[in-house]
Every structure is written in structure tokens, then in C-alpha cells.
Length: 170
Image 1 (tube, rainbow, N blue to C red):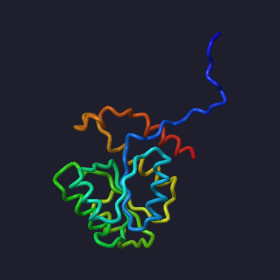
Image 2 (tube, rainbow, N blue to C red):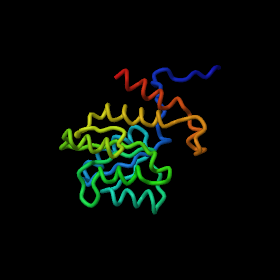
Image 3 (cartoon, rainbow, N blue to C red):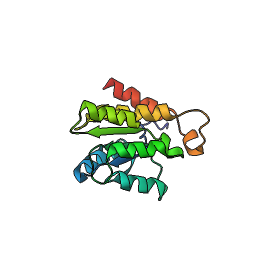
């Protein structure tokens, strides 16, 4: 007797669980919502309440997220200052892709974020499908042959390609 897989089970897209995203926002409910959404997409989530806490996690606790999503308007250290600080570092953290966002976005704020070195600027509330596309696109563009990080260099290259293809169809 031959074993056949059950055909009513739909194929499942492997999660993008090789990647971690740091979510930086002073509002707990925003971190929870974004964290749940990204966890459901397969990402590992790290949280920080402002730029000071985020830099502490990355520099003192050696946390190396694959991508950062940061709010702009936060107490302590705002998103623009955080982006400037990250981009000025003399270590691999400076190359981490960053998505900056604000619910009170202005053209000037967007210009400041871009000048500081953000890779993408989005307005909140997020269009979650667009956010997933941006994250997958930034992570895919970050992959390059000969990466110095052996973990990243051995990751399957088709996971983000498959996710991008699926997102484009939706």
C-alpha cells in the first residue's frame, strides 16, 4: 500500500523565521499590534520603547536585528536621532535596514528621516500588506553572496522570494 499525502491540506509557505525585526515605539499598543503581525509572518521580534533603549540593546547587549522598524516621535531619543546614531556607528549595525514611520508624518519629517539614512518612510497606521512587502524587499536586497555572517550566508534564498511572490499576488 502506497502512502499518499492528504490532498486537502494546503501547501504552507515556510515562515521567514530566519530574520528578526526590532520594533521601536513608545506606545505599547503599537508594539503589541506590530509584534503580533510580524510574529504571524514568521519574524522574531525584539522591542524597545525609544532610541536610547534600542541602542542599548544593540550595543551593550549585542542584539543584532536584521531590520528595524522605528517610530519617529518618541521621548528620550526620537527616531530621526536613532537613525543618525545607527548610521554613524563603525560596526555592522550601521548597515541594518531601517523603516521609519509616524502617525503625524509631514514632508519635512520624511525629508529628515531620509537625510538621516532611513531606507523607507511609511505613515501610520500601517498598511500591513505594504509593510510586509517593504520588509521582505529590504531583507532580500540585504542578502549578498559572500556575506561575512555564516548564518546569513547559508539561509535559503527562496523564502523571501516566495513571500514576495505571494504578497505581489495579493
